[in-house]
Image (cartoon, rainbow, N blue to C red; front, side):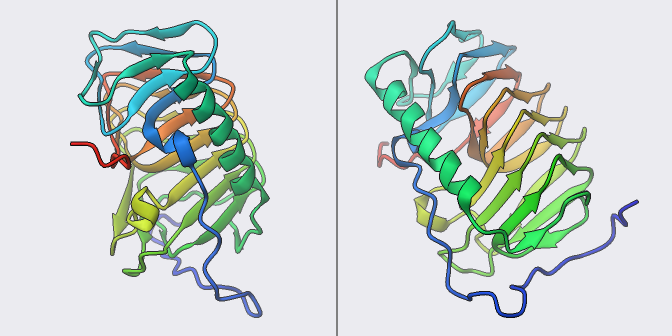
Length: 237
């Protein structure tokens, strides 16, 4: 059992390069706060700020309204923008997957940890119970990459919080969750970063993303009275 009070201050292992990793290039996928591979399904009064909601193929988008995409962002289904974003998402997913891990956290619960920038690998699932703190060390090039073999799950009321400008890299969130299966954000949880999932992404009732996006390569994004906020990288007002 993981001690939830344990604090890990992650440093590069002996002999590891100290140079910053190549930033993950989201390209046109960065225009989307929500992108489904097959569909986006919403229940309740979800609000999306700072990015479009779209799906490149499949059954389309349901539940908007009552969900709201705040202007100037829009909903898009199967147009040129969503097709380009899906291709760029696939490239970004593969780029994150190919990175060399700096730390192996397989079997550890992320709740209670404080992490510095790096590439964190999980051979299968990753879970968050409690609070995960990401410390950007006031480095504008800070980047956190989580390589998760199967599933990402956050518990009810859990939180990912950022300190010292952990989300400022590249005018996007510098936090990337590459998930080989599905991702589930628990009820009333708070999350930060871009989820790049091969399968489905589910945000349970009142889960919120304060800075980031939910992007499914092949699956459906399921929303339920959520608040999703990302920095709009297109310079729109």
